[in-house]
Length: 623
Image 1 (tube, helix red, strand yellow):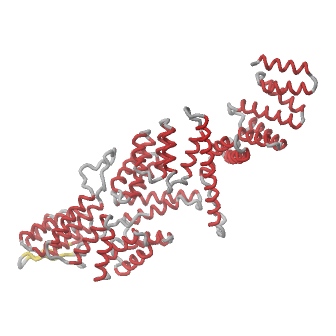
Image 2 (image 1 turned 60 degrees about the vertical axis):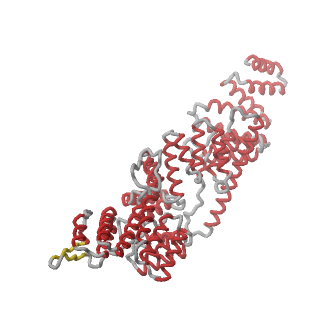
Image 3 (image 1 turned 180 degrees about the vertical axis):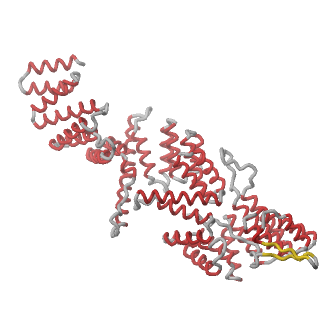
């Protein structure tokens, strides 16, 4: 799940009265209604200057604008305050203003891109400043504040928040927040910072306790501690409790984008739950998509939200929208995971649009994700570069983290099983051996997964609970390929693969493929089970003449099956049935030499030499 990315607020809390009274001289008092502010600050700054207000009033007003999200307005007031107190030569008042400005810059960095994608096609950022620019400016402002006498609490808090914003200095941030808490254990901002760092360090139970303490100390704290509580509960396996925490957060602030994002991700996860019905998964996906869309409207500069929406538009076939959101995710990513997933989706869009160079470039930036390496292989296949595709998959499967990726093993096995020009017979044999090994790894992995799932479900009360079969296990072509690989090496394994293929073909619109049934019959025939083989041949012939009759390839199939059936009649000693089958076959295809040879052999065995000679002569003449 996403980290609690809602920024920690600094600055002076808004006054309880919700209005400020500012005296202009001895007679006039100006009242500023804090609930009726607009983003224009010119009049407010003029009043503050004319009244020669002390620094607390300046920072209170700037903080109020900041609290509303009007960062530009807040910055104008603080910049005016700097100029005012410089003219007044009031060095003591400059420190809190510089620190407030530093916090505004840190907050601005949260909505700034981490990097600019040079190859961006749709989400072009132009002159937008990068996150590091804002953080560097905050550093300079903190240094300015350090030159003057300032509140130790405010200075330490600003430093801790700045260290946390950089991510690379979270250990230093933790030390800073702990120093503050030793002096003031109830400092909510420091508690919030410590809780976030413990969460990032995967100390979820410790983080949870601090978030719960924040909630007790300050139920209206921002960011809402319920977000952090839910994140910790989720990681501790208490997913329903996590969901309730986020729902409560959304009840208190219906426009808050963070709980909407988290509830959206929770619903999207639920849509993948194999224990749910198809309708329940469909509803969960629709609910999750709505939450994500609302979250994006609340904050269009969050990488995780952009990633989710990009996936949504890819599924809808709206590739241009998906690409723009993927580029947004890449540029505003605040973690390696979000960055990689952004590149993955941008690669998928380029892949769909047949821009294979662009696709491979994006996939290469996401190679820590198995789907990216699979995407690279698919692009090479599309370009006819089989060797490059095999290399990409071999490299992926050599990594300890991705060595058991089922989809990659199946794809690589299929590539190695196919005939490739330019390979020697020894190289082809080695490829087929590797293909068999890969398929065996896949089957063992599937068996282990199924057994493990069954054990977990042992004792479940719901009769609807089933172990969901992986989609690739229903891939008829994969089982057929495996069967062909084993035909000359292990007839029993080939037979099992053909039987798996038959089960899967039964669920296709046309039903069981008669060619698969014929192949099963051949293997059983070769094994000596004559009666069973005859039953399968007859079944195959029946399917050819009924459900598959309209297929244009069925004439060749019926010819093959009828010949095999005639052979089985011979093996059973039923010469009458065998002759009838050969005669029927030759009526359809008089040029069928093998049938004439077998028929002449039967005539010779019956001491009908002249008839046998005639049939054999016909066979030779037809060559």
